[in-house]
Length: 149
Image (tube, rainbow, N blue to C red; front, top):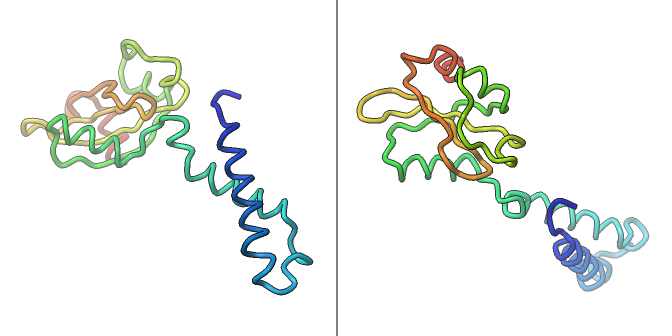
């Protein structure tokens, strides 16, 4: 497994078992006949993994990426679209320097922003939370089309 999920799996299955035996089975008449303990455990596990996926993988959300841009001094930040690593190659003629393996797998967030009165497009990696590339929208037609589609 690429991430250490054993502890989360054990915790979620234990919480599902506890939820079933302590609360659901005794308080709702006929619950044990309609649904089994394993179904409750699986639902709790799925809920846990869904909520904890960004934390487990270390990925940044769009809001966190926007906060990074705000700290860097950008203004009027608007999320535009996600793009794949191949999309990044279409936007910029030369390859982005120093992309990590995880950045190449996850794709990128594309934002429009204003920096010193100039409208720019900014590409942020959700894997590392760093600004990968940026360019003026007047200089980069592909980025401009991507943002204003």
